[in-house]
Image 1: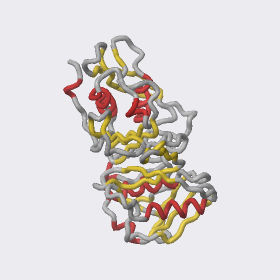
Image 2: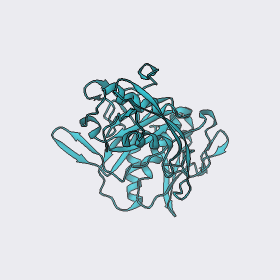
Image 3: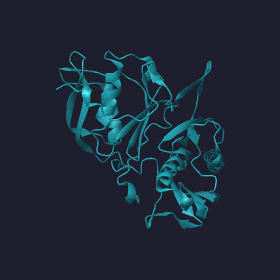
Length: 308
């Protein structure tokens, strides 16, 4: 898929397990299972976060209507910003041969480049969950959306990724550097993978899943508990968003909390397109990992934890 975002360089956006596993969100004394998510901008409009949506619609057009309404409405939560700005109107939408086309008013172009990029990502991630919709296309007053003078073609949840071919039969491999704990669990230790096969997923997801599965070489200690649920991995504007299931908070690693967190951060920051890592649990970031480390803000590399 062609991408037209010269002013931001390469964008990697991979969502692998968005709908296949229904995440559980704790509210008071009950657990609510959501089948869908509506993606919103965070309070600083620097990243994305998700809100559970329990719709009962089965018709594709009706689901699109409800999702677009959710994307437009102002959120009661102070930490969430609606992806479609208040001054932007939706002229109409249709679904033809698995392509959902949304036509916006001219004011869509009034957004800053940063806001437009995040808004577009949130809209595509939300609408591409609809059964029967493979791609999402944007038009403005009936004309194709253009960015930096180039037409933005129809997008799906993985079409922003330079690392996903959309064809599982195509093999993709590369070299990776991960960080597991050393043998006595006192520090992080560099772990090299040659010709790592990440076919069918983004490099980011491959890295996190390798951390979950643990090292296969002697002299290393796993950092993440075995079989921790990974909901999705998304990179937008050089920030990698890693969303885990609830067991990320309940399962205890054999190493310190700091080594767990920075094994993830340091490993992902070895990738070219990642500069910061934001971890969430079922879409929530305003929490502490084992009541010790705040996950509220995106994190940067910590070299002090790596053994000499």
